[in-house]
Amino acid sequence: MAEVPQTFFDALAVRTWCGLALRALGRAREEIDAINVYPVADGDTGTNLYLTAESAAAAVEAVFEAHDAHGSGKPALADAARAMAHGALIGARGNSGTILAQLLRGMAQVLAADGETTHTDGEGLRLALRQAADSARQAVAHPVEGTVLTVASAAADAAGGADGDCGTVARAAYDGARAALAATPGQLAVLERAGVVDAGGRGLVAVLGALVETFTGEVPRAVPVMSDREYARVAGGTGTTSPAGSAEVLAAGPDECADAPGTGGPAFEVIYLLEADDTAVARLRQRLDGLGDSLVVVGGDGLWNVHVHVDDAGAAVEAGVEAGRPYRIRITHFGLGDVHTTGAERPPREPAQRAVVAVVPGEGLAGLYAEAGATTVLARPGGPPASGELVEAVRRAHAREVVLLPNDADLRHTAAAAAEQARTEGIRVALIPTRSAVQGIAALAVHEPERRFDEDVVQMTSAAGATRYAEVTVAERQSWTMAGICQAGDVLGLIDGDVAVIGSDVAVTAEAVLDRMLSAGGELVTLVLGDEAPETVADHLEARVRESYLAVDTVVYRGGRQGAVLLIGVE
Image (cartoon, rainbow, N blue to C red):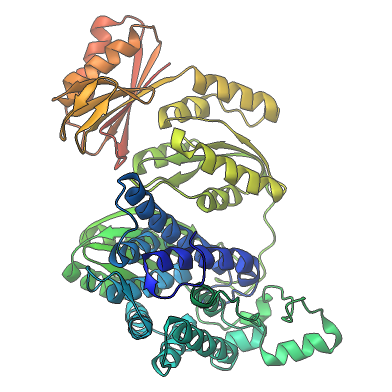
């Protein structure tokens, strides 16, 4: 990470800010989760903000790494700003994360307006903060005061009155946001009853504090999380105070948000990415607005992140299908009898003894793994999940023991970091270094929760290790490979991660790959077809196995949008 302070808002400042914001949200995550009572008291605002920021930071890092690899120096401000916005958009989680993504997108629209500019000054930062606040407010179907939108507007207003460099503007924005955050309990009744400030606004203040640190090198003062009334009550002898001077706080009880907006309301949170044009999205907004509440649609240029709370999750997804192509669909049931649906306290759910968490490359395999009882994390083509997403999935599995299947050699270190983090939370995690989704399928096939944990892990590891894996994909550019030079558009057959066959036809290349794999023996062939696989390729390969390899069975799955045209496993 670059040294602070930064003088101008350039690509290096974007990188520094993203890193510092991620660190700040990491420190504040549990605190923000604890005060999360609006729009749903589900205790995940801090986590959602952290995961959104993590995705933004990873995208910026990828841009810098690409420039380093090509020896072209640091990227332009426009490149870094667009990467930040895109990373946040595709990684946005929950209501709060979706709004943060739009805030960053609004800033990027100003910072990247002139693609040739290498940096901007205080005036550019003022304009960026204004555009961020305005675009976020426009993205929310029914804006409510006393929320992160109020805090963002206050930050932009304060920045607009500041005269000076980026550090001066950032500090003014932070101070304005901090004052607005303290006032949120007086604007939203549910916050006042719970005695806390708005959780999303608290997260935005942390992000703006990181912006101050980026340009000044100074960490702003601590932010209170309780209302003045509640702080006085706690400080008066009914609670304790933290070293930072802000009261330690527990999540609001059920009686504190009984008539909050959303109580007795929709039971499902639906989130998905959507490829669609502006006209279709305008119709989608109207359709979803009639189905539920907490509607936020952010993005543009053909890619959108849709968030809504509804009773009919299927209808919300169908509306997305009508508008364009939805993917990375996440449906969360708030739970029968929880504070969102009835206002009654939900009894804690007993953890399962054992669960499997797996990274999968496509929606089809996600369904297959889920049917087998696994908790899945969907890997985006070109955008692997971050460690925070894997940790969240381990938590979501809600088990004392978890088997983690990364299903990608490049995710080994990310998965190891996630496993280590989960272990610090008291969860027993075993990482099986699966390098392909077909190895994960083999491991899951022998999984038996009733076995002793160590024995189960050994059997799953053995099954994965006994499965050779391959994939058929299309080359994006000319490059050197183990099989020679390939050109853009060539069909590549990779066996155990290395290019073994270069061809021009998917079926012919796949057959050559399969022959090489079966030459060493095998009993079962697994084929996972991507959306771009020719319709006849599965029949062609199944016929090849029947005719040439006696006693070898074949099973075929639809993987959906998985990146590779075809995945092959041989056991």
